[in-house]
Length: 305
Image (cartoon, rainbow, N blue to C red; front, side):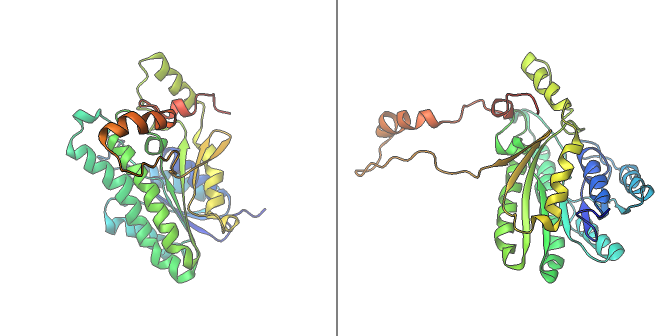
C-alpha cells in the first residue's frame, strides 16, 4: 500500500522524543525517508545525548522504513546545514523540512535574564532560519519543497512566564509568511502548525490552581500522534497549493488561524489629541479589545474533541 510521502525525503528537527518522534514515525509510515535530527539536550537546552535520535531512526528502520540520525544543533548554522546535507547525501534529495526543535526557559518577565532570552531565540527562531536557509538552494533548484514550521499559541495568543518563547514563536509565523511570499515563484510552500499535545515541553506548565490543573488535564488528553497526519499532508504533493497558512491541531480538531486584521477604525478629520483618544476613540474601540489576561485556555475553554 502506497503512502502520500512515497519517494519523499523529510528532515525533522527535534525528532528524538515527543511530538518530533511521532512526526518521524508517521512520515516514515507514509513512505518518506526521514532524517531524524535531535542533539538530545535537556528541556532548557543544555547537555546532549545521541540516544533519542538513534532510537527513533532505528525504530523506523526496524519497521521497514528508511531513516538516518543527525545530532546537530539547529542554533549553529553549520550543524543546521548538516541536517539537510545528510538528507541529500544519504537519500539523494530533500523535499520537506519540519522545524519542530525547541527549548524552554520559562520565567516571569521581571526575572528573565538575557541568557534566558538569547538561548530560546537562538533555538526556536534562529534555528528555524538556519535549517530553512540550508534547504532553500535545493528547493529552488528542484522548483519544489515544503517548509513546515512549528509555532505555538503562546506566540499567537500569549502565555504567562514565556516572553522569550512567545516572541520566538510569533517570529516563526512572520518568518514563514515571508518565506512563503519570497519562494512562491519557484513552487515552494511554507506553513505553520501550532500544536496542542502533552509532551516534555508542556509538562513544565504549572498546575497549582484549579484553573491551571484543568488546563493541564486537557493537555494530557491530547497525544502527539494526532499532529502527525497534518504534517504528512503538508509535506506531500497533496498540499501543492497550500501555503502561507497557520494551522493548529487540538486532538481530533484541526483549526485555521487568521492573520492580524483591523477590527475597528475611526477617523477624526481635525486630527487626534490625547484627550480625544481617551474620550472618543477608546470607548468605541473597547468592545473589540482582547482581554488583558488572555491565554489559550480562554480561547479554547472546551474539552478536546
